[in-house]
Amino acid sequence: MEKKDIDWGNIGFGYIKTDKRFVSNFKDGKWDEGALIDDDTVTISECACVLQYAQTCFEGLKAYETEDGRTVIFRPDLNASRMADTCKRLEMPVFPEDKWVEAVKKVVKANEAFVPPYGSGATLYLRPYMFGSNAVIGVKPAEEYQFRIFGTPVGPYFKGGAKPIYIRVSDFDRAAPHGTGHIKAGLNYAMSLHAIVDAHDKGFAENMYLDAATRTKVEETGGANFIFITKDGKLVTPKSNSILPSITRRSILYVAEHYLDMEVEEREVEFSEVKDFAECGLCGTAAVISPVGKINDHGTDIEFPTGMDEMGPTLKKLYDTLTGIQMGRIEAPEGWIVEI
Ligand SMILES: *Cc1c(COP(=O)(O)O)cnc(C)c1O
Image (cartoon, rainbow, N blue to C red; front, top):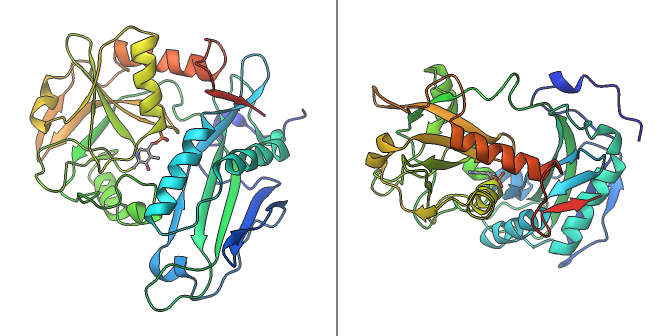
C-alpha cells in the first residue's frame, strides 16, 4: 500500500482530512445500511437536537501498522459496547455493535494510505460519533440521528520520550454522582473546557478531578484515567461510578496481572494517599501512559520520587509491554488485535 506523502513524525494531534468517512442515518426507528462517502461536511437543521441540547457522544480508537506490516485496530469491540452504553444513557439509538466494528474496519481500509508506517510513532486516530439531527425545540430526544466515523492521522504523542507532566487538583468538578461521568458524552467535554484553559493559563498540563460529593477521592483528568504504583510495586487505580471506563486502563490492569505478575487493586483512592505512591500516570488511547511528575494541591506540590525527567520504571515496563502487544512485538491476548 502506497502511503500518503506526509511527514509522519511531525503532524501533531490535529485534524487532517482523509479520503472517506462512514455515514449511517437513523430514521423511522431504524438505521440505514450506511455508506462510505467523500463529503467531509455535515448539513443539519439549525434546530437540530445536537445544536440545542448537546445530544452527542463519541469514541476514540487507533489504527496502526504492526512490526510485520499488518494494519490493525486495538480492541474495537470494547469501544462498540462502550458507545452502546453511552447511547442508552443519552436516549440515543444503539448502532449494532458488530456493524459498528465492521464500519470502523471499512473506514480504515478506505483510508489505508493514511495509516502511518510502523516505527513512525504516528497512528490513524478514528473518531466514531453520533448526534441527534432533526429539529427539536421542546426538550426531548431527537427522532433522527447520524452515526459517522472519520479517521485522521495523528503524530507521536511524545516527541523525544514521555516527559512527566505537572498537573493540579481542580476546584471544578467533572462529574456528579449518578451523572454522566461514566459515558463518553460530548457534554462532559464542553463543561471541562473552562477548567483546562484555566489550568493551562496557570502552567498546569491537566486537571486532577476529585469526587464531586466529598472532594476527598481521586477520580480522573478530563480525558484520562489515573494509575498509581505503590512503593512495594502494586498497581492501584481508582474505582468510581463517575469515571470513564478507559480501555487503556483495563488493558494495563490485565497486562500488569498476566504479563508482569503484579498485584493490582481497583478501589477507592483517597487523595490523602497520593503523596505515598511511588509513581503516577495517566492512561488513555492517545498517549497510552503519560507520567505525572508533580501534582499541585492549592499551592502545595506533591512530588513523586520518579521526578520530572522520565517515566518511572514500573510505568515504563507497563508502557513497553502494552505498546509491544499493540505493535505485534509481544503476543497479544485473544481478540485484542483486529486485522483489517
Ligand atoms: C476516552 C476517555 C478516557 C480514556 O479511555 P480510553 O478508552 O483508554 O481511550 C479516559 N477518561 C475520559 C473522561 C475519557 O473520555
